[in-house]
Image 1 (cartoon, rainbow, N blue to C red):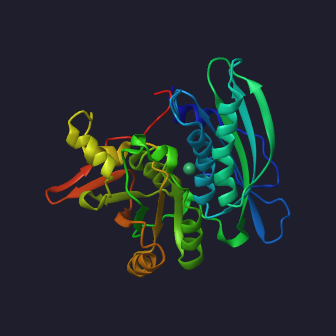
Image 2: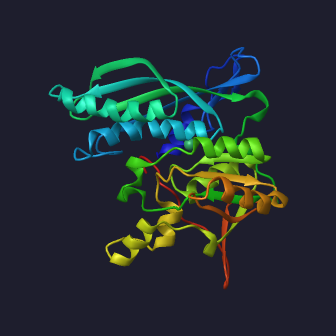
Image 3: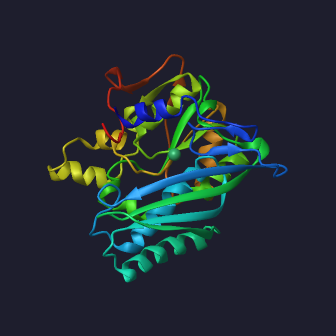
Amino acid sequence: MNEFELIARLTRALPTNESVVVGAGDDCAVLDVGAGDRRLLFKTDAVVEGIHFTSETPPEKIGHKALARCLSDIAAMAGTPTAALITIGLPKNFDPKFVARIYAGLNELAERQGVAVVGGETTTNPERILISIALVGFVPRGRVLLRSGAKVGDAIFVTGELGGSLAGKHLEFEPRLSEARWLAENFAIHALMDLSDGLAGDLCHLLKASGVGAELLKTAIPISRAARLAAKSGDAAKPALVAALTDGEDFELLFTVASKDAVPLLDKWKQNFPKLKLSCIGKIIAGEGVRLRDKTGVQTLAVHGYVHFS
Ligand SMILES: [Mg+2]
């Protein structure tokens, strides 16, 4: 059973109540908790030694990554993060200085993004460090952006460059919070999510939620320098384009917008975020799945993103 089959089974019949606006299945849960014209965003995420970082990873980067992953999901709803609870599981022989440095990295990002750390829990975890973060944030009531809003004819965009994150970016990335809020404030974005498991797999989640398909232009996929270097060096197991489509932990934004807004959006983006690439990579079409177009024709994309337990 892979990660997505397990999630599907666990979320089939979850308890619910009148606060739930959007339950499991999007980047964050959306709740109506009587906060006036705002909706509450609620998120949890965990990083585990040996999976998301190694025993060699500088501890500040472990803390940074643990929180940045959660913040990326708030960005995926175009929200503003508010407060976090930190649970840390430590082996019996832990080094207090090492743990303090994990928190230093986490706190530095929290302060920069205006997130309060309001408590948590410490526990023993045999052999491996585990950090789990619960995070709340807010989004204006009428501006909740889900994965399910893509429409046939929409242009598909991604921020940044994709693939090769394991070469270093996955420990240092900056969650796209201000960019996502700017998009939601300035354009009628139809669907939005962040890329955590690879473009090919994550786009499929967005397409399924929206009941549509996509056609991507091969030459428009922004491939990272890290993915190109790895492919060139010869020790990469896959070509750079496949890395850009399937490598996890890009933590960029993926969104769709009516095609008439595509050019104005690109123009305005360049003025506001001159250092961050924005690429129109294709369009939403009727049907299902992802097709990849190049000058020789169209092929169905059979590659998938990163899946736990597969
Ligand atoms: Mg996400």
